[in-house]
Figure 1 (cartoon, rainbow, N blue to C red):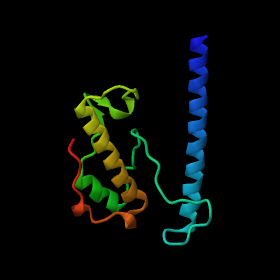
Figure 2 (cartoon, rainbow, N blue to C red):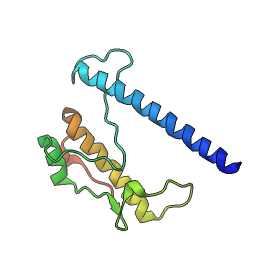
Figure 3 (spheres, rainbow, N blue to C red):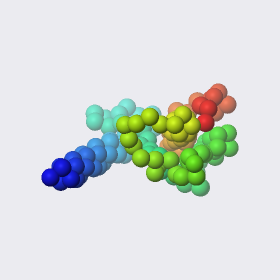
Length: 131
């Protein structure tokens, strides 16, 4: 019985997450269609959706190439990909926390560099978090 409730809860969580993800991606696509400097129609957004496992194309914009040259992409901890770290309500090792913070910071900068390069400040002005 408990197992069935846990399974149902997991299914509902995955479905609601997928629905919210589709919704925000659609808003981003409508915002992209409006153009980089145009006023956004109601219900649209500008942004980038990334996850710990996000990869950016090797053949990218010059701004993303600059980001990659300035800051190393580090997506592992203890030899494992950070996207495989279990999400639990427990205390994380400080090194793992630093690795996750750096990965999130790196992804935010790479996402801006790749998809909204005009919104990324001067790369030399960044001070990356310790990892």
